[in-house]
Length: 101
Image (cartoon, rainbow, N blue to C red; front, side, top):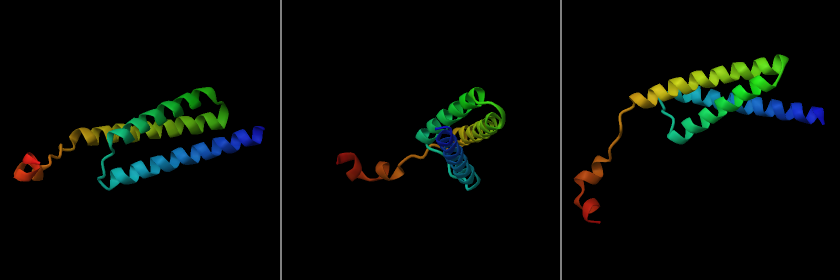
């Protein structure tokens, strides 16, 4: 039973690390996260912080480090989305068919 728990921990850790890798790659490429993705990242950071407090030893340190990484990524992603201009659909304003249906 214990082995299965630690296998699940390893899968969870790898999945979270993979998500953070993609978030960081998107940020480096100038791709902003959607509100849904930001919300999921917030939830992940909260969960990682919780696991960091509940676990002990090496695994607790790993979770805390991953949580810190998630919080940094979240802070940068939120700052980038706050600076991103709101895109308006100019086509619908210029197209009379869009207004009249």
